[in-house]
Length: 260
Image (tube, rainbow, N blue to C red; front, side, top):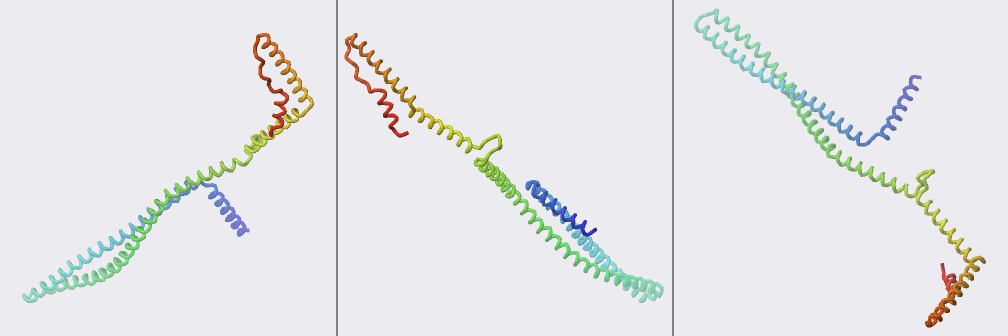
């Protein structure tokens, strides 16, 4: 049962992580990644500083121990010389005292020699660790600078991608219906062309019907009567007769004969 719960939790966590990454803003995620890289570099520098500090402390201890060794060695030599002088002077007490002091200095020299050897070994290890730490910091610094320079390029590409996506959406909407209540451009054009074609068809039917011919005849009669009346007026005025105009019926017939 516990194993099943763990598997379910792992699956749920992976699913939520995938959905989050899919819906998250890439610009925000990029800034988070850069911030995390900067924090890691800062922590690496702090660790490297501690390693280098240990190497410096070991070096200080080594130098101090070697200085003490040189001082003790000088004191040992001085004690041996003073013991030899006391022996030559026949002073047994001082000879013994200076000899014991020289032995103490010698014992201290032996201890310092061992300590110096240990410190040299530690200093060598600390120096190697410090060099590795410096190299790691330099390499990570170069990687961080590369990420910082790539950030501007990625942000520019992201902006271009957003603009291209908006353009793609706009182009797609040109050939798609906007919604149930708003028709597309293609639908409106088809509707207008349909109405225009229907109106033209009705006009042609009206022109070809009996009623249309009757209207043409009536119009022609009116035109003939008007021409006769104008001829009478011209005769009364003593004017030449006006050139005969073509009958209206013939003109309309020619118009009907022309292709639409």
